[in-house]
Each structure stands twice: as C-alpha cells, then as structure tokens.
Picture (cartoon, rainbow, N blue to C red):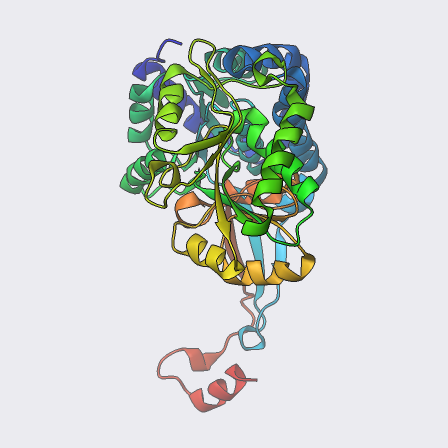
Length: 460
C-alpha cells in the first residue's frame, strides 16, 4: 500500500477537529446511527473480509467469521443496546457536610482519536476500537497495518464508503506514516501491537500528554496441574495455540505441566492436532500461515538449540510452520525471553504449583494466564499471580465476552476495552457539582467563624 501523504493526514486531522467542534458527535442518536451504519457495512463487506484474511494469513472462512466478523458485530450490538444508559449522566451521593450541593458525573468524548491497528487481526481489532470511539462520541483517524495489505485495502474501502472523512478516516503506510502520526496531537491513542512499539507510542504520547490504550501481549503462561482433565486440556491448548497459527496476543506462550502428565499430554496434543487438521496440517484448509518471510525467519531462529519433540516442519515459500512442541528449554533461551507469536509451544515441568507461580511472578506481568486443574486451586492462582485476564480450564474465551474488560497490566498493556470499558476508554468522566445560591456555610470563609461547629458537622 502507498503511504498516505503527510499533507492528507494533516488535512484529515484538521477537518475532524472542525467537525468535532460542531458537537454533532455528542448526540447519542447520532452515535447509534453511526454504529448501525458500521454494522451494515461489516455485513456487506463480509465476503471481502473473508477473502482478504485468506490472502494475508490463509485464515479459513470459518475462523475469519468467528474471530473477525462476528466478534465485531456482537460488540456493535451490545453498544447499540446499552449506549443510552452508559451516556446518561449519573447522580452521585453528596456527603452531608456539602449540603445542599448536588453531584453527578457526565461522560463526554475525549475528541479526535488515533487508532493504530495490528496485522494479526486487522479487521476485528480496528473495528472494536472504532466502536468504542463512535460510542463515546469521538472522531477517529484509523491506521491500517501494511503487513496485512489485503485487509488494509478492504478496510479502507469499507471506511471510505461508510463515513465522511471529517468524521472517520483511514490512512495507509509504513513506519514513516506511524512516526508522522505520532508527531501530531491527538486526544487519545489506541494501539495494538508489540511491547517495543508500545513503548515508542507511549513516549510519543508523552510529548502532548495524550492518554493511551495499549494492548501489547507478552508471554502468557498455560498451566496444567496434576488433577487436570488431560483430554480436555490437550484439545483446548492445541486449539488455542493453532488459532491464527499462534499469531494472537493472548495465545498460550509456554506450558507448565505437572511432571506426571507430560508424556500423556504430548500424545493427546498430537491426537488433537490430527483431529482438527488431519495427518498433514500443511494440506488443511483450516490451518493458517505466518504473516511474512521476516516472521518465519524469526520463528526459525527461536527453534535453534531446542529439542523439538513434535512438529517442527517449516516451509518458507508457503510461510508455513507446523504446530510444534519443544522441550528442554532453559529460562535464558530466546524462546523464553520474547513473545513467540507463532505455533510453537515450549514445555516445562513442575512438581509443586509454587514453582510455577514463582516463575510467573519473577517475569513481566502477562496478558493472560490459563490454568487447567481442580476448582479448589482457582483462588490460589488468583491470589498468587497477576494478569490482564485469566481462564480456568479454558483458553482465549475471556476475550469473547464483551461484558468483561480486556487489556493487560504492566508491560502487557495499559487500559481496558470491550463493551462498556471501550465506551469509558474514549470518554472523559467529568465531575459536576451544583450549589444553589440561597444557602451557604459562613464558617468555610476566613476568618472561619464557628469553625469548631463545622468540624463536628464534617465528621457526622
């Protein structure tokens, strides 16, 4: 895709500021109308989105519908249903000492938003962020990822056909465009991507003290305890690790399994892969591909010096890497130092769950933790660890519930979104007090007459 010229970006940003200044976007009826337009556009463009995801990542139509299209549509429906209630001013109780003040919170849009989308889920992530911006009453400049060019082109067509550029606009290009965008002043920046780029965006945002929502990822551990249902665990982990060929921010990054279950898990994992993709994943229409040659080379590098106990096949021309289990990795090996973002799963063993929680806590806080085992351990896992989200006897599906906040903690992300949290992410909660003129407390003014009485009233 050609880079959008800086002059075009500057004009887009200026016209959006002018349109936001008309206050039209603050009308809840206007916001709901735009959400409905977006819903119709996604439905209309669904065949093109499916074709684009096959072209960029060889995602099957079924996987694309579930992870890209339906997820965005559900988010839109939830906002349409609840937006009036979210946007309504909320009465807040006022302490007796402040009588007769009345207090409330008003939710107002932050202004013009910048949304920088990632390549691994280029439609869904952009659309869900856009839903939050529209719902809150913002204008938005969207930046598509050049690493998913087919999806970027479809998204540009969808946005240009659906919205006026002075309200919602989309720009294309490489990192030079990102750099120019980040030099501009926005009212909020929403970014999905790597930690390294997240740090650069936060640094750029600091120049204008711009609030950010950063969805970054990291190394999310998966734990299989001695009392886990090994059949269920193996099948769900195989599914979670191969969805989009592991190119998902919440994909399980490494596995801690109780020593007694390791051998059985490997057998069950292999069986699960065969049931999903057949005896040769490369021939399956449901097994995706790695995004580009650079990513293939990086993943090949991570396989150097490790013991491959299952899979390991790489076909660079086809951008294919088979589901792969590796063993015998040390904590210092590169595969345990960086987010894998591919269908490779290192296996580590443990005898006591405290070994696992100690390891997890000694590293950066993950975007997700997955635990397979008995219900009695759930509270212990929650008490001894921290993560953006957690699933027990399941993977990934916390992201599918739009009623749950989604996001990281610490280095795995800043801010939450999905559902009402998306509305809040793009809104300013404005505190309001109203005081009548017919009553006033003289003791609050110098020389503080009867201040002793006021102190007693303050502590009632």
